[in-house]
Length: 163
Image 1: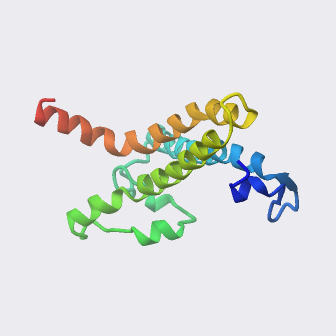
Image 2: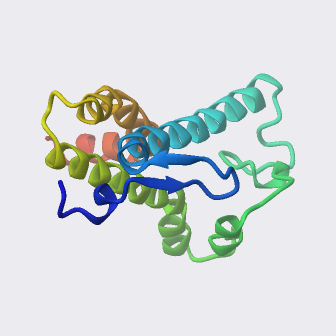
Image 3: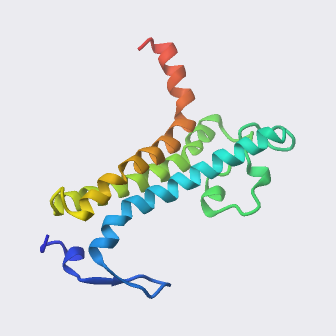
């Protein structure tokens, strides 16, 4: 572990908070934190979608399956992937996967950090145990990122291809 530059440094000062923390603590909690943020984000999207259905707001000025008309604070990714019904169908299909792609990239980073932590120490170390304990959170975040976007397409593919 001494050859690892992050692990070799004894402490890191967290920006904006001014807190000093051990580098190993930052690395060990990174995968859980990234997974938790994504898990929360997609959970909030599902809750918002269910609220729209409960209030019967779907379809009233809001395209089916979309909350763009109600988004009061769009972000850069929303603007980058914005399409209209007049946009080519292939482009809408590709850009529909923008959020899952970003989420999978973040989950890939979390897995990479977690794997580095597991490789650097023994499985009995507290950092390795923390990464392993956070694995279900990672799986839940991956499930929420992929299934709502790809689940229907996978089901259709199974029916047409007879897997």
